Amino acid sequence: MNTLHFRYAVEIEKTRSITQAAENLYMAQPNLSKAIKELENTLGITIFRRTSKGVIPTDQGLKFLGYAKQVLMQIDNMEAIHSPEKYKNNKLRISVPRTGYISKAFSEYIAETDNSDDMEVYFCETNSLRTIENVRDNGYDFGIVRFNTAHEKYFTDFLDEKNLSSKLLWEFEMLAVMSDEHPAAHSENLQYSELSCKYIELTQGDDAVPYVSGAVEKLFAANRPADIPVRKVCMYDRGSALDFLLTVPNSFMLDSPVPKSLCGKYNLVQRKCDFRDNSFKDMLIYSTGHKLSDMELRLVNKFYEVRNEAAFAEYR
Image (cartoon, rainbow, N blue to C red):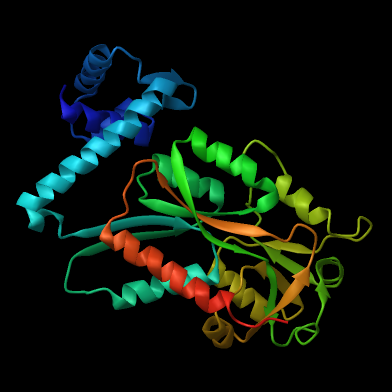
């Protein structure tokens, strides 16, 4: 069995296209198709099937690809013993939610990294479904997904379907984050139902739950009075969101606890905000069988470190 064919199959899974995979592998498409056919004949299974959404793995194909990635990882590790300089270039691709503590942890990690070595890092802030896609199909090493615990079963089932493993990073309650000039900045016992009636709510707007359309909006709508107009601004860039909170002092957003240093930098305050089902989780996700590299582990440990900074602060 030719393990080079394993790399071919993994590239097809990543791109969902034999044409694109052949281009990425610098080989002719007919030769790639022939190699995959030979691999399927050797294994006695069908690895891929063609659909309107591209070439996707069969159930048996998913199992094979999981094992193939483990084999290829071990081969790379063995080659690294003989040629360590070949792997000196540190490459990392991560996909995460748009939130303060993760951004701060990432920045601190880069600042502490030895800049004498080669380094190529991709840091993508996006929603949970796109993060799952990035890790599953787009070559990202690992990701962090965020969801309300009321929707946890949908996410765990979806991750299993995509052959992804997960580990808890943080379970928390959302806080109301706002400018220190906000009318409610120094109030206590805030209620989401009252804030959403009186002030502009800033949201990411692209949250989604697998299998259930509109689940996130329904969750928040259930905490708002039905007869009150919705005043909401959807924004997909965290930096722009922070600028918005400062420029529009009667706006607020719900977020995980923000490190104190970031609040001071942007003149923000955060307050406990009561609403039903206020329980969220951030989960590390990665391909089943993937062992985090030393570089990845250092970054994950930094996430936990900054999480603790925010988690053990006092909020009122």
